[in-house]
Each structure stands twice: as C-alpha cells, then as structure tokens.
Image: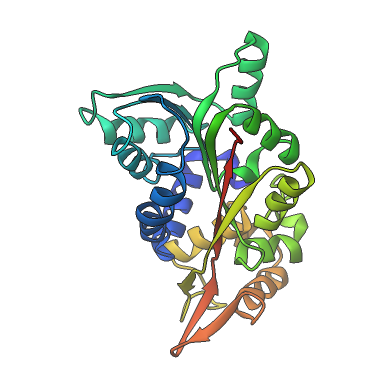
Length: 285
C-alpha cells in the first residue's frame, strides 16, 4: 500500500522522520539565516501587502517560521495554503489561532494538481511574491511543466523556494536502488530541479544542507519498534513495508540502508545521510 493512501499514517511517519533526523531544527536554523538573507531581504517589491503560496504546507510547522520572518519586513501577508490532508490543515489552523491580524489565510484542501486545474479553469492569473515547496515537489504530476507554471505565477522580483533531497539522501538512494517499491513517487533530487532551471534559463541559487540521522542500533533483523516501522515506511513510502515485501527483500533493504552507500560512521555512531538542499529561484525584474 502506497503510504500516501493513508494521510493520517503518512503524517505520523513524516513526524517520526522529522524528529529522528532533527529536520525541523535544521530548517529553523536555515530559516533564520538563508531564508532571511536570500528570501526576505531579496524580495524586490515596493508593495507592503505581499502574496504568499505554500504548496504542501502540512501542519505549518515549517511554514509558520517563514511567515514570522517575512513579517519583519512586510506588514501584511496574504497566504494561500495548498494541502491535501484535512488533518494537517486543522493542525495548521489550530497553531495560528489568534496569532496574527495582519496575515490573511486562504485554504485549499487538495493536491497541487487540483489547485492548478482550478486556477486554469477559472482563468485566475493571480501572482505571488513568494512560493514555497518544502518536501512536496515529489508529488507533482509533471515536474518540469509544474515548475514552469509556478515560475510564471511569481511576481517580478518574487522568489520561489524548493526544499528537496540531495542525490546522497537515503530516500533518493533507495528509489534508485529499488524503483519498484514506490512507483507512484517521482524519483527526484536537487540535481533534477537545477537541471530543469538550467534547461529553461531560470536563475537559481542552491544552498546545500548536510544532514545525518543516528541509526546506531536501529533496524535489527528480528523485529521493528513502532518508531522504526514509521521511519522505514516513510523512507520506502510503503505502509507496512516489512509485511508487504518478502523477508529476503526486507533484509536486503535494511542492509542497503546501513551500507556505505547510505550511511557512515561518525564518532562511533552509524549515521544515515538525510541531506537536503534549498533551491532559491528569483523571477527577474
């Protein structure tokens, strides 16, 4: 079963991934440095009321810090949230309840493709000063066409931020090694995105974030704890991965994750690679 078919379980497994690999704190640090320098300060507009689009915003845990930083420069924000999980939207709304009077939210409970189709069918040509996609580019239908669509939706001087795994990340390595495990998920890494930008002469800047997760002692071949199950299911993007595949393949995948292709020993600990990159795309003035 594709993990995306159970949105509640997907959110639980994503939370386990974020917690295990300190992803939220890493992105928070980048928000306070790279996002401030390369997005907040570089947005080229004289408008004080800016429009923002979050694609796959989940519960807002990562997007809310973006808003806080943007408010340091822009007094008013209109933020459109596109998120397929109704549970995630409820959690997002709960997090911001009573928080800001100067941030107006619009909610679209659906996929990016459904949102795009709605805009196109309505002839809506609204543009945004900032668009962000954090860990969600993998789920669009046609990566190149959809990036070009979003680029067109940027105001001149606007900036799009895409956070995506590097070609060294364990999840990308798993997809390369075992493409049949998650056939409905596009095999993407940061190089895939930058190649599209180069082909279409779209200027970009890439910030690489080295990241590792401690898997010392995890994933014995005997059984799985709840947290291990969530992590493994998220990486392979299959619910109940251990039950769905033959025992021989399960053991092979665990061995692959622990191999030098995905992990390395650091200060006596086995650390799996979870590198991701921030790609910043600015619309020329």
